[in-house]
Length: 341
Ligand SMILES: Cc1ncc(COP(=O)(O)O)c(C=O)c1O
Image (tube, rainbow, N blue to C red; front, side, top):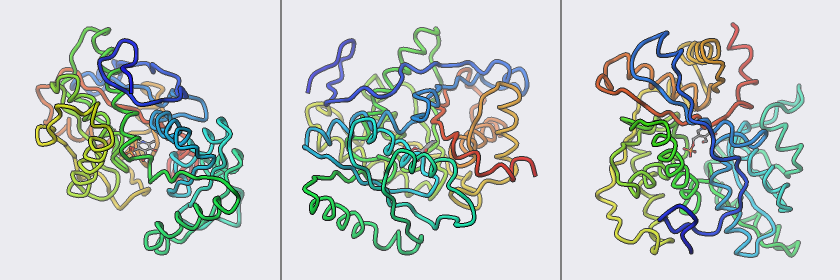
């Protein structure tokens, strides 16, 4: 491992895939519209065209590791509209890997694939669909069976877990934390807090570790879009421990107990992937006031949570807040009916 230029952090191998640095945009019109602190959007929805979103930052490190381990195929999993699966399928195509996706749910036989699923197919990924109950009870078995299937073809495969959130994936948002620090220094302010949507925990884990390595003065909050606070305190901590174990050189001197993991629970609503009226109202508000498009599964839900927390006075003393826009636009289109109901 070697420290990259302009950084003191020792990064592992990385394949440059994301269009970075992404802009840090001040939502001044939103502030005029509703008052409160100035919210800055870290536009990670601009990390690429079809590669939009947070996942490509993690995949830079995950695919570098796959290459290092002489893999020619990757296998990953997620919901039918998984942004992570779409990004993985596209990167696999770009780098010449085979890709197999285990998707949770049943395809709708009455209409063609849309959104992320359409792009999975376009990128040439092979797909196995799996009913939710079976998915959760047999995921590990399905991964192992697919690794074996590739082995029979003479190919070594790497398993990438849900959301790309593991020891290696954490690096994507450690690097993003450094980028965000450069951004706010360039804009001449110090954020009171950084927020992101939390779905599998890796983005929050990377931001939390990155900010800790940079001095720890800016707290990171994940607003969970599934499960609950206890689950993510545990998951983010486990990802960070795994990271520390795999990369002892980079993690030298870091004391886990000194790292504060903050989860804001209460905005999951009726469940993962189900959005209610307030979320759609937030999506419409941001689109009409700022021309920024959020998605109902992750960023819209989390941004709505942030606005509600601000309205309740939780960040009454804050002047500048950073919200990481983690992408997800392809997941918006399947909700067209609900948006204009
Ligand atoms: C658009 C979008 N935002 C946020 C997240 C959450 O990131 P993480 O899985 O790293 O918690 C995801 C994926 O789960 C996502 O697709």
